[in-house]
Image (tube, rainbow, N blue to C red; front, top):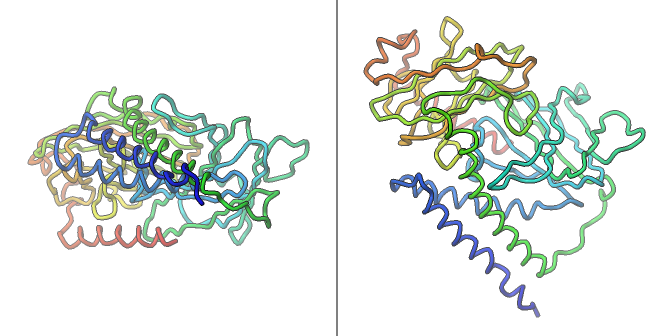
Amino acid sequence: MANDSAAGATRAFAEAIAEAEQIIRGAPHVKTDQDLAEGLDYLAGSIKASLHMVQAYQHDYPYFASSTGPYTKLGLDNPDTLYFHAYIRDDAEYVVTGRRGTTADLSFQIMNGDYSPTQSPDSLTAFDDRELDIAPDGTFQVRFGPPKDDPGPGYVTLAPGSAMLIVREVFSDWENERPGEIRIHRADTLGTSPPPVTADRMARRYAVAGKMLVARLRTFLAFPEWHYLNLPVNTLTEPRPTPGGLATQFSSVGHYDLDDDEVMVITAPAADRDVAPYQGFQLGSMWYVSLDYINHQTSLTADQARVDDDGMIRYVVSERDPGLANWIERTGHRRGYLQFRWQRLTRDLTPADGPTAEVMRFDELPRRLPYYERQRVTEREWRERIAARQVAVARRMLG
């Protein structure tokens, strides 16, 4: 017979969902039905993600869980990235094996906790696959564990407080790059089985999932205040190391506020591939998540963008369709976030490597946008661009 706590196992989680809905409805930027509808959709993805993450809280029998994706978004997720995480402890050894795909970047990061409404976790270790010994067939192995006198090659010492391993696989050419494979196990539990889960433990999982859900929403509504909203509107920062210590990544950030008859033209050099094999730009909503990047062109990598003859990429952020290859669709979002990322860098970026922004009237584009005629696309060409995005994301999710 189940005990009382098990009988009410989901009560705390249900109460957390109700609290989370009030957080969504009370968000300061909710002005329209679209704002609220998107917030409730964000809530649905967050509910799913919280249950998924608490189930993955397995230090002794870890596995890589998808941290965020098209339907479980958080933290201004990068449309070009597959995110994975596994929970670890600093006194155990873990073995990560895999096969390198053909994506632009593969990186690893150890964090000492999770994000909260008041602070970000510390990055304890961060590196990309250039630090790995990758065999000719693409396979690799790396071990993470406590300090050892002679750990041998391919061993990464875990700093005190290590709690989470994050893996990011980044696509630049969506159509042609393919993901790899990644696995993790604890060295001393491979071949054994975990004990069965009790009803009491399931009740605790639901309670923890509820706390995670509420904290997740509060955190990423507060996060932009730290890094974005104190900047002048319709501007972008110079390239800078990404907060949080991600290896070999720089970013440029900002926020926009545009009328429907205004456009923002953002100009940035197409990065030298020897310097930055990955360069990406995206918009984000006031919920601090990516816009719909599957069915709309709300992001572009350097591979996807049309580069002008002077080596610059000119992104046209607007609500109205300008009929241009580098149109970044606002999809009804008058306000939102702007984000550039450069990854796998071989040198620090300078202001000259970064973007500039200019706001103009929509009807001024033909006169003021350099290489305007070269950027024009037909309706059929645009549909082909969107179809390519839809197919590439579907294939990536099954990869």
